Length: 440
Image (cartoon, rainbow, N blue to C red; front, side, top):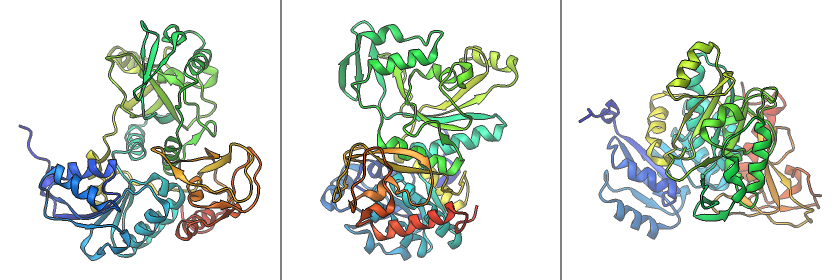
């Protein structure tokens, strides 16, 4: 038996969890059964009946949490750390701000909130002497940890990113591919399993072969925006490359263009669609960093041990093939209380914006829907942050006050009905974009 971690001897930490009956909330509540020093004191979810059923399924935990329908009713004097997981910018922004005003640390699961209000909330936390951290278990925090780990070694990172949520599982014999239980015929893909001598041509052919599948999601670009604002990484293209690639190919795929890869610049952030065969291990939506190798003898030795090294030896890929949602979030809760772990302040360098997919009329209403929290009529894009451009999720619940032609970025002044708290928080980030406001 391995000895229990010293974290188990930590003084009790009282947690408020919003969005407690969501998928992420359940995984965290399940894990808290194994971490008695972390006490779920307050659970918030509009679906109280569903939450009570979840708690009954999970079995006895640490004490009996207070269950609420409204985050406005949280008794902050009985909470040490808020874990915000609603995915709603109105509720999430207000709840996080209230927590910080009451001296409560914030662990932010809601990446949607972070891309609109993260700069302001982080500054609020800094002023209050409290932590504001993205949650381990989701790709942004995991990738930030990987970047910190790789950077600390002295390796030069040229690209970072993650796998899309669902693998592309190819059966070459049958000529079929499965993505999230959807099976499609892809006879051409079987002949494209190897990158060949022209990497970009192969990637283009693979993309054509799976063109009928939805591989890009607002959630992906949202997560990579959280990373970009904390690392300084930038997208190579506003909609990301999304290459269809096997994990062993990533060092070649994210080589510079002059070396045969897709990358136009150093320091890029991207998402790839993980291609694998049945029975092969999944990358499980994990995260990666592509580095320049340096000493060729070292990296040829590492290639022999199974590390992912480009065919020309210039690049290597280091990756973590997992993100286990709430099972990892105790790491962040401890880091918030102890002041440990990588915690770079977000800066408004990159903005998740909304580009119109077609001509939109005045009065068009925007609603966030679906598993990936997407908005009909606009495409999520990662652009250089400039004052006036509306964050993608600021559109939630708004309507256009003017007609906006196809291909334009929606601007803040185009919107009526934006949530006041989220809008005020974004204005803080706009001030930082112009050199005023939030300190570096």
